[in-house]
Image 1 (spheres, rainbow, N blue to C red):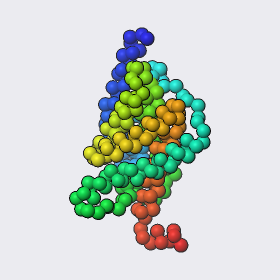
Image 2 (image 1 turned 135 degrees about the horizontal axis):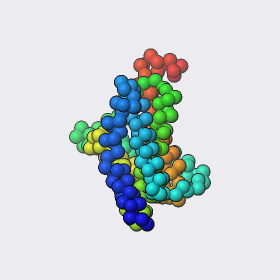
Image 3 (image 1 turned 90 degrees about the horizontal axis):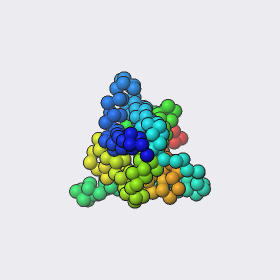
Image 4 (image 1 turned 180 degrees about the vertical axis):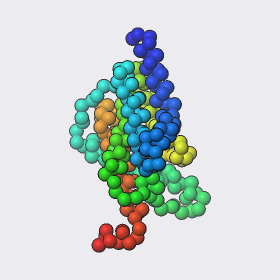
Length: 228
């Protein structure tokens, strides 16, 4: 492999692990000035991770596309996406249980509150898929393999850097996302390198929270009307 190509791959690897979330944070005000927080963040995520993936493809570092696996893996991925919400809740609730002796209720995510929007719905799907392209297809299937890292290390590092890029949500978020990242990474590996499986799991997790928060975020009168 030419030396300059190897250097580009290593530089790209550094760009991926050194807080892409920081690039997203600084890009948001330019993508959607004074706009919706969720939409601005998702669009910025797609732009940043899309650029990293494109760079990976150009340098031959993005990993090979795998054929779609059997339907059972997609069903499992969707179920695990919803289960991830429960796992993350438990991890965040355990310190509260230890301190107060009772578990808190699962609260709606503030960023998802509001009325349903098709644009936001699609942006959630696109952002989750973009993250999976970078942290699974690219990190496990591309750069780490190119650097001859063992598979178990690639899985752990992919999960770790995915979690680290959620540190702005708080210290417990890193632990939560480490667990979810391991689920996404293992699904990617068990599906033979099909990013579609891990992306479906990730999308289902985010969409579950989105719809849960929409319902809880409505005024009581609207919830009563919807139920009737």
